[in-house]
Length: 383
Image (cartoon, rainbow, N blue to C red; front, side, top):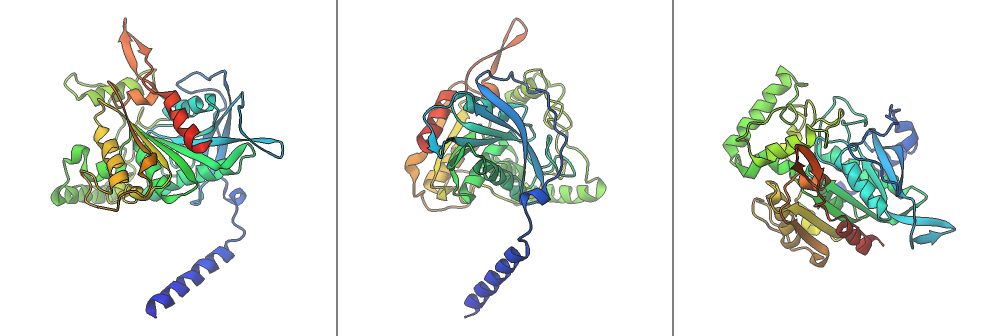
C-alpha cells in the first residue's frame, strides 16, 4: 500500500510540475550568443555541402552553438507534402575540443554523403553558453546530445524517425549514455572513445582502481573547491619530452599545431577546470548500455592507448559484462546490430581527422577514417 501511495504522490508531483511549467518554451529560455560568422574551422569547407550557424536550447536553460551541414545534392529520400526529409546526425567531441575541430569534420563528411549533420559545442565550452567555463556534468553533457536530437527533429528537412549521433573521444562514452537514455536515437557511432567517468574515477588503465586512491583524489578535489574553484588544469602540453608516451605526442601533434589548433579549444589552450569533472569521477556512463536496442558502431584504432575503453564498452554492451567494470547486466536483447570496428595501424588521434604523417618537415594528411563505412552504417539503420 505504501508503494502505491508513493507512486500516486510522485505522479501527482510530476503532473503538477508539468502543468505549472506550461509557459516554458525554447524561446523564453534562449540566451543570445555572439557567434563567429567567418569560416574558422581547422578544415576547409567542402563544395558538396551547405553550412550555417545555429543555436538551440537544453532543458537546463543553456543555449548551445552549432554548425548545421546539409548536402547540396539530395538523393532518394522520404518526400512528405513536397518536402524532402533527410536522415540526420548530431556530432560532438572530443572532450575539451570545439566544433571547429574534428566534430565539425565528421559532420561535414556525413553531409557530403547525404545526411543533415549538426556539430555542436557542449555546454560551458566553445561558443555555447554556461558559466564558469569548461565545466562538465554527466547529466548536462548527456542532455546536450538529447537537446541536439530535439533540434534536429524540428527541422523541416529532417525525418524525425531517422536520427543518429556520433561521439568522438570523451564524447563517445557520452553518446552511448545518450543512446541508452533516448529511444529516438536510432544509430550511434562511438569513435576512438574514452569513458570519461571511468578515467576520471580510476585514471588511465585503472591504475587507481582502489578505494584509497579514489579517496585521495576526492580529498584533493574537495580542498580545491575552497582553495581556488576556478583554477585550470591546463590543456595539452606546450612541449613534449621525447620519452613521453606516444599518445602525449599525438595530442600535441593535433591540438598544438596548425593541424588542429583552435583558439576556443580548451585542449589547445588552458584546459579544463580542476574541479570541472569532479562529478564524473563518481558516476559511470555505461551502466545501461547493454540495454540499447538501437544500432551501435564502436570504432577504434588498433594502436590507440584508449582502445581498452572501446573494446570494454562493446563487450559490456553485447554481453552485459566486461573487464574493468564491476557492474554486470543481462546480455543485450539486440546484439546483431552492434559492431566493433578496429582500424589497423591507427592511433587515438588518427581517428580525429584521418591522421597525419611527416614528410619533409610538413604534416601530410592520411585517410584512416572509413567515411564510407560510417555512411553505410547510418544508411543501413537510418534510411
